Length: 180
Image (cartoon, rainbow, N blue to C red):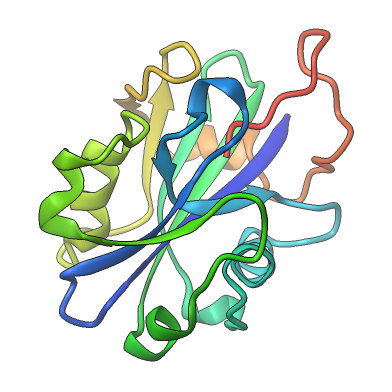
């Protein structure tokens, strides 16, 4: 199983969010998604989130500054995605494009006017609801890019997704995948 992380950095007033305009994989091309990527061997999901945000947005953060809000499991057990949130005006102001995928500072109220991957429509409201007991576990029964998901119990996460699995270079059904 490949493990990914995706993070959403908001301003303290939750009016703006950092997203990244994806170039790959193909099903995400030219769409906005949270910042993230693979969890490396011996790396916790929070450590991966901190590393990925530095690599893609140029801002150093501490793993403990990221709060895990959603764990998305693929039913066949091919991948697991940890979604994180963080609120920081300073980090938001410092974020900038570091790769060939551009960092975008988006008004949360304008998300529907932007081309996002489909699951952003339900992930952002979860990120902004500080009253939820997190993480929420979601079993994804859709095809890549469909962005659906169904609630599932915590026991399934503990059983299938430990967040420390080797990610880079693993083959999934005969092809390299990048879900996060």
